[in-house]
Image 1 (cartoon, rainbow, N blue to C red):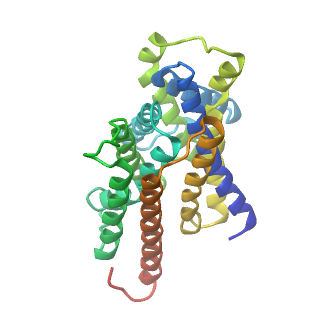
Image 2: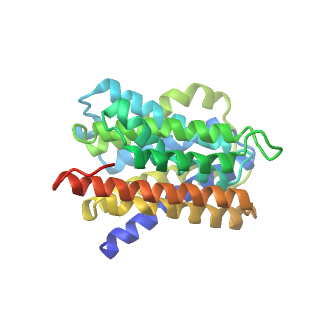
Length: 294
C-alpha cells in the first residue's frame, strides 16, 4: 500500500474518533445531543458550501435518485444522533466496539437489499461478530447499560447508510453524497435543536461547537483521496484503527479505560471483521478465475 494512502487512512479514522470525542465532550459540558449534532452538520455544510463554491457548482446539488439520496441523507444524521445519545453515558471504547460490527451488518443486509448474498463462511464470521457485540453489551447482567441500545441502533442505521452509499456511488456525484446528509441533518434536527439551543460554558466550547463538524468533512475528503490511491479492500482493515484512537482519546480526555469484557468483545468483532474482509477479497479474486465455495 502506498505510504500516502496509509497516512490518509490513519488520519481519516483519527478525525472520526476526534469527532466523537468532541461530541462527547460538548455533551458532558451540558449541551444536548440534538443541539450538538445539529451544529456538527451545520458547520460541515457551511464549510463545504464555501469550499466547493456551491452557488455555481451543479455537482453539489445534482440528484439522479432523489428518494434514495434523501433516505441516505436521513440515515447519517440519525446515526450521529443515536451515537451521541449513547455517548452521554458510555465510554468511547464501548460505542466504537459495537459500531465496528457495521461491516458485518452491511454484509447481512446486502443480500435482501442488493442481491449480494453471503455464503456459509461469511455468515459464520457475521454470527461470531454478533457474539462479540453481545460480550460488549452484556444483556441480562448487572453491567448492562440501556444506553448501549442507542449504539446498537446507530450501527443498524449506519449499515443502511452504507448500503445506500454503495448503491448510489456509481450514479451520484461525490459532492452531493457529502453535502446532502449535512443539509438534511440541518433541516431534520433544526426545530428541536433551536428549542434546545444553549450558550456554551466557555470560549473553548464555543469554538469547538462551531468547527468540530469540519473533522467529519476533512475525514470524508481524506477517504475519497485515499480511495483514489488504494483499493477499498486495502483500506478496509484500517477502520479498526479507530478503536485504538477512541480508546486513547477516551483515556486522555475523560480518564476512561475499557474493562476486560469490552476488550474481549472488541477483539472478537475485529477478528470477525478482518476475516470477513479476507473472504470478500478471495471472492473478488475468484470471480475472475473459477468459482469457489463460500
